[in-house]
Length: 52
Image 1 (cartoon, rainbow, N blue to C red):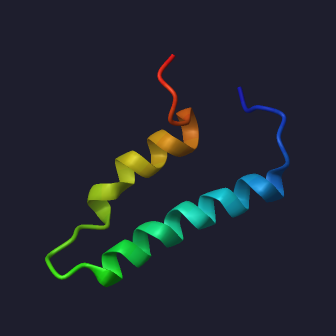
Image 2 (cartoon, rainbow, N blue to C red; image 1 turned 60 degrees about the vertical axis):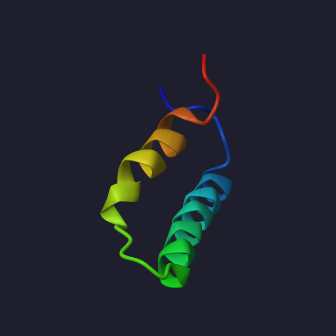
Image 3 (cartoon, one colour; image 1 turned 90 degrees about the vertical axis):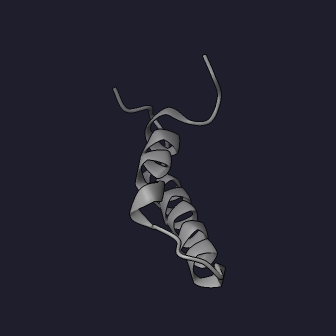
């Protein structure tokens, strides 16, 4: 089930999360895998950060 939240705010949150990972990648001095971050991004997006 998807929570009843503002879809525009949810979209901005996902864009912000993705932009932060890309910014981290651009500033990294070593090899950095964007695809390695995918699992974390999806976990945060679909389940949040709090342990239940």
